[in-house]
Amino acid sequence: MNARLDHHISEGVLEEYALGMQSSEDCKPLEEHLLICSACQDLLAATDEYIQVAKAAAALTRRPANPLPKPIATAVTLG
Image (cartoon, rainbow, N blue to C red; front, side, top):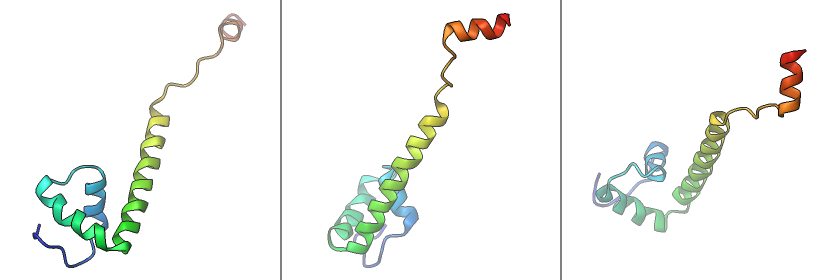
């Protein structure tokens, strides 16, 4: 990436930045641009929010279903 960033940061690059996928070398110009560009700050905030929601949704789908309480489970299997 260029040492100086004179344009807005793309959504893909901001997503990589928010996920920590950018190298230290690439982060410096991004962070300098983010200090002065409110449009990119807003897009980064929206990207961060999207990532947090996606992670929360993924966590919900990985959780095992709550098992039935034992008395109900026994009644169902014996029934």
